[in-house]
Amino acid sequence: MTSHDDLVDRARRALTAVGVSLPEMSDSPMSARSPISGSDLFPLSAGGDPAAEIGRASAAFSGWREVPAPVRGRVVKRLGRLISEHQEHLADLVTIEAGKIRSEALGEVQEMVDICDLAVGLSRQLFGRTMPSERIGHRLQETWYPVGEVGVISAFNFPVAVWSWNTAVALVCGNTVVWKPSELTSLCALACSALVERALVEEGHSPDVHRLLLGDRSVGELLVDDPRVALVSATGSTRMGQQVGPRVAARFGRSLLELGGNNAVIVTASADLDLAVSSMVFAAAGTAGQRCTTQRRLLVHRSVADEVCRRLERAFASLPVGDPFDEHTLVGPLISEHAADQMASALDAARKQGGTVTGGERVDTGMGGVWVRPALVRLPEQAGVVLTETFAPILYVLTWDDLDEAITLHNAVPQGLSGGIFTRDQAEAERYLAAADTGIANVNVATSGAEIGGAFGGEKQTGGGRESGSDAWRGYMRRQTATINYSGHVALAQGVDFG
Ligand code: UN1
Image 1 (cartoon, rainbow, N blue to C red):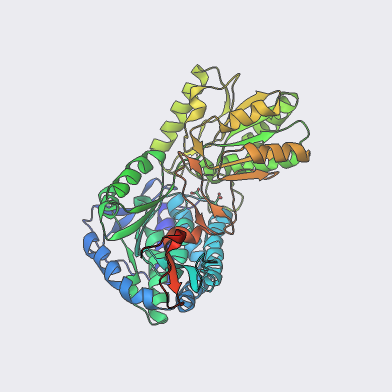
Image 2: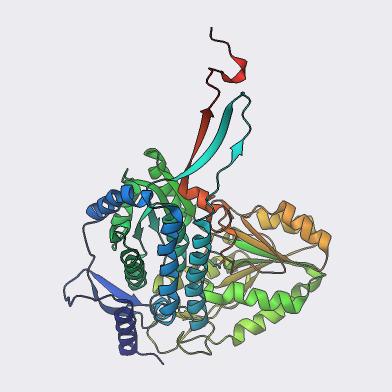
């Protein structure tokens, strides 16, 4: 069992290894915390004045944008190498602050290495198009330029990977970055910032290209409202996005939002049930239900519903819940007491709305944090409680008779991040993909664990943003369309004659 003192030791060792030195402090209002012990680890200093830090990144932009993109790529290549070298230390910090089990914490760090690889390749592929001009002796071309300073606001549940999706791509695009991490994961942020600043300096660039702003919500608000921040990329709840989006828009800034998910998997009568059940156990209970891609709904064909529920209930009941540093554990702690309260109220509401709940009780690990057993909730019909995202391991189950009904249920929530279908029937899979209104839609794969090569994000109340792979880089750049006249004559478009 990992004790409070072990957590403090491990955190200090990891920070020292990545080059973060913590000043001795006793009266700071900020502190590092772990959901494992449910207690503060040590006090933290908030660092520099946020407005001044935003100013430093803004001032660094003019130099950074002049660096050729493939040379900027070398910084990200070095960053990727540093992250690989420190994979264990970074994973320790992710486990300490977010409570992720070992394998998932290592996976999150791997996701950073992967996005760095992708961004390095991108640094030679920020392609623009050329189009045929309608005029003789003219050429039309599109060029992509950096937007300027990018503000990254990240959540506790992916404390390092989501930062890296934004940062690796923003940097090769020629932007500078200011990062406001969740207050709950400051140590992860200090470690990543130390590595990116080291990569910048070792490649001969200013560390001001990346700045870290630790602090509470008011710091995030400064970043949202500051006109020097050209793009705000924010990950968090739909409620947070409802505030960030309009505030950034009011100053004509750009925002990229990754908000709530309420992800469903459809299981048809033809599905391979072994495959479906194993995939869904991870999607629903992994990360203790605290991913934006967590499976929150199961839409199962009536003929296999009892069998699938029986298997899921059995799996949930036997999942090892406990110390995330123990290699046998599969479900770590919830992030806070508040999260457990939210889960309990959602389960109460589900019962009142006709649901039958199995699991969902608190588990006493004797470790100070808050642990729960994943819950399965069978509902006779669509209910209000299903429409909201509760950041905890609750899987709501609804049954259907006809695939169209299942697809309607799949789309009948305000969020639109991820979804999936388990089927052996290709026509069913195709019908699902054509109709699903989510940014991510999978066949024989559940809702979480997307690879970085695709664009990540979702529709409706998920916010519409796209991050990480594919052409998501375009969100971090501005497009310029240029017409070049080499004919020596005036020729107006659309055949206009002006004397
Ligand atoms: C999130 O939960 O905010 O697809 C991101 C996944 C991970 C990323 C999740 N690659 O589950």
